[in-house]
Image (cartoon, rainbow, N blue to C red; front, side, top):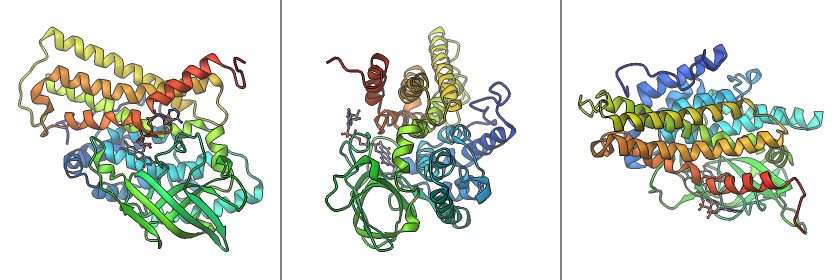
Length: 418
Ligand SMILES: Cc1cc2nc3c(=O)[nH]c(=O)nc-3n(C[C@H](O)[C@H](O)[C@H](O)COP(=O)(O)OP(=O)(O)OC[C@H]3O[C@@H](n4cnc5c(N)ncnc54)[C@H](O)[C@@H]3O)c2cc1C
């Protein structure tokens, strides 16, 4: 356990009006995190290794199928519910929460999100049949899905088509390309790859983006390079190479054209990265309170809470945490197809706020608690390093959020200064 007592929920079920299911799921994740993940996090970080044991626990707890629809045997959580659960996991192990996010998105996007998008009855029936194949692998075999999109160019920011290509052939596609920063590389059973379907004589287009689950053991799939980063070290985000990899039609996690529709009509899909960092923000605050009260395990029972400067710093941290939580909770409630411009601006503001404030809280925590608090035997320095990564993640880096907010606040769609 990270403390002697059970940690309080990030969102108090009564105060925030959670449903009974949301309260139970968040409690389940918190218990798992506090009792099991917290104690393992140091080794995953230090050795930069994948949290395999945590995934066995997540499978056993039914949480690998959190966003698999109920009719397919899953929990059927929506984005808001998933986010609350992910934040509770991020509190104890950032790398587990972030990689679990990649896995869960393969179910959320092909599940509840796809249900919200337009498809003909025939295409939807085909899609529902196909997604069940993926869901059965997850529920029955504990299969893990990754989400490698980044290529090092402008595609992951949504600016151009993905360079990774899928050439249609009899029975499926031949996929070729390279993905960088592929969390879960070498550990996922399937790589949920975004690529561009290319046909002879046609320019690659974002409209032709395909979302394909490529088996990790398919011929032509390779994992290369090392992984020795500042933070989120347990994500093992190495480089993936696809050399003429054949996949059948059953690999499609979304039908043709549906990913593009999702990216343009259901933008909350991209904020699923933020709950892991909301959890880290809470962890930085929790650590500070425990440490100053002399109750942080491994730090000795010295109290430091009587100094007014410490009290002011904790007050600042509390205010920042509450601001972050409130904005986060509001935007998660607003997740839906075709949000209004006001909702979209709030979504970017929330994403930016969570990613930046998580690191702000962690650095305030270190400044306030002092030198002994940043020893590697304690979790704070890992929280500090992990929390730095949020603002770097595409498509909504902190810079790109500012870009989008500034432009959208000043221009209506299609407006120019010409
Ligand atoms: C711990 C961790 C895990 C990750 N896991 C995954 C994963 O599982 N799957 C995955 O797909 N990716 C993953 N990523 C990758 C991430 O989303 C980025 O692609 C990666 O950090 C590379 O970013 P870069 O800063 O080098 O990108 P660059 O493309 O070099 O961008 C640099 C900066 O320029 C700005 N920028 C980029 N494009 C534009 C543009 N078109 N217009 C204006 N400004 C722009 C952005 O602010 C960006 O931060 C992960 C990253 C981290 C840190």
